[in-house]
Amino acid sequence: MRLLSFLESKYYYGAKKHALDRVAARRLATGKFDLFHSWSSDCVRSLRVCKQLGIPSVLEIPTWHRNKGIIKPAMSESERAQREAPGLEGMRNRLLVSGDQVFEEYALADLILVLSEKAAWSFRVAGVPEEKLFMLPRGTDIERFTPGTPPAKFRAIFAGALIQRKGVHWLIEAWHRLALKDAELVLVGRVHDEIKPFLERFASPSITLAGFVARPEDFYRESSVHIFPSRCEGSAKVTYDAAACGLPQITTKESGDVVVDGLNGLVVPCGDVDALCAAIERLYLSPALRLEMGRAARVRVEENFTWDHYRVRLLEAYEAAQRLCGRQPGQASAANQPTAASSASNSPLS
Image (cartoon, rainbow, N blue to C red; front, side, top):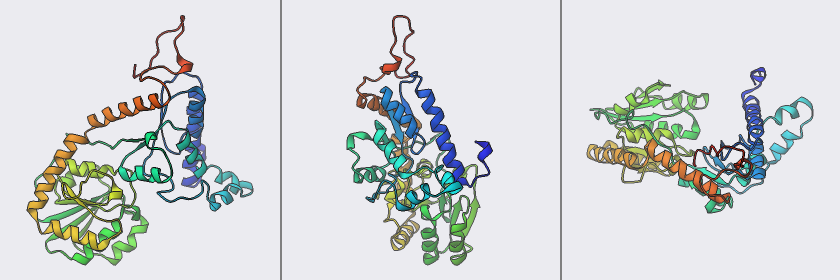
């Protein structure tokens, strides 16, 4: 794959996905495996082998259904034209992961792991049956991410890549409109070119660009509120970490399910700058509410979103995939059943 590193990134990463899939498919074809777990867009060949051999399969979705809740064809006209382009252009385009490949993965997988209710909704709209969906929210390290001391100054933090998909441009505009006294907005994450015009247009001495940081927990502990108005996430990891640090949050439903509106934060409509302004102002004016929601945030993480909770749910997902494939949890695949001359199965669930 390194020999292809000269390719434009989208072609290079597409080629890597296809190469990984070919390797995994060959290994699965040996019949030595009892369960297959992969990431969406990496595994159509592997899932075909799983279906042929009766190996239970789990497909993990990082964000939403590829169509994001919109009914449209499996392959767009632009994708079709790309694939049918002549010569070198067509060869390069066939390195990309197409929509029809991803949709075939959805169909072949025994169980689809979704990270939030909004992600599950996008699959229901596309007609995926409920029994094929398994809710698997993320976790966080509650020993690493711990509450700090609330700052005297109102300090809002955004953590994540500074791109429009994560709604940071709406946040910058809302902050400009509010012009809060004795307040600071800290943007933690790499600045992408698409967000630079917004930073220039709404420039303010109260906005600090921290860039990428190795220890985001230090920034959470020194903040009053975490604001993450994303328009599309599976379930944003930063919302778990910020909650574990005892921060109230302002998010969207599209950001995941960590925040329960009115309990441990405020959930605003995606793209609604007026609503975002109102939510920021509400927490700015009420230190007591921030403290109450911050405590609730930490408790919610401790009771639902540790990595121990994640491990339990993941094993439940594997067992569900086995049942959907017609096997009892821990039962070896048909191709890997022990015979009189063979050793017992090495299934991790047995």
